Length: 163
Image 1 (tube, rainbow, N blue to C red):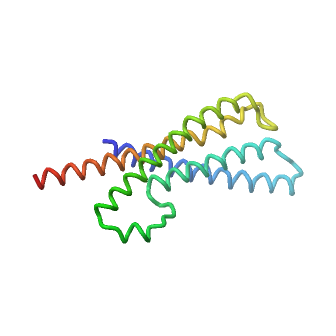
Image 2 (spheres, helix red, strand yellow; image 1 turned 90 degrees about the horizontal axis):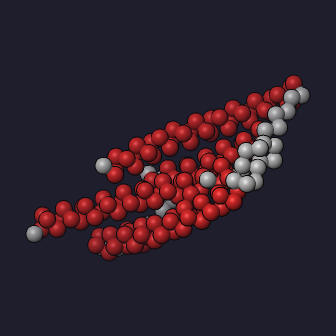
Image 3 (cartoon, rainbow, N blue to C red; image 1 turned 45 degrees about the vertical axis):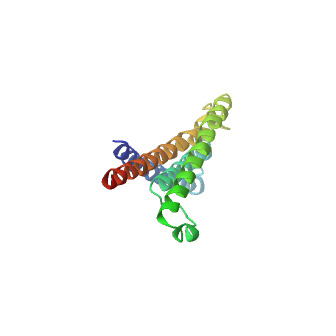
């Protein structure tokens, strides 16, 4: 159940990130074209571009983390015995879960403060950009919980087969 939920979430996030990137690309090209060919400048575009960029970066990071597509230094881990590797991976996941919990809690605090500060050319709070951190840290934490539950279930099945 948890595995399916996280996999569907990552698939949706991958699509949303792609759509946001396409929007950012088209908006930037359109803004440059209008500015240099027609002399029209949309003042809201830089702020909206920043908002999109922040969400693209953090959501893309959450997807990469959830799909284990991030850079990994596994030279020493691959040289370990499987039992030791499992223990180390569990410790790493629990450590990441603790770190992500801090990011969620502190990210919410910062987002609340930034909700009182508008963008330069909009009356929209910058907190919407800052909300990308706690939201995507939550998605990463869900991914860690899924992996920990899967590891626990695998270990439980192994014990049942031996016993």
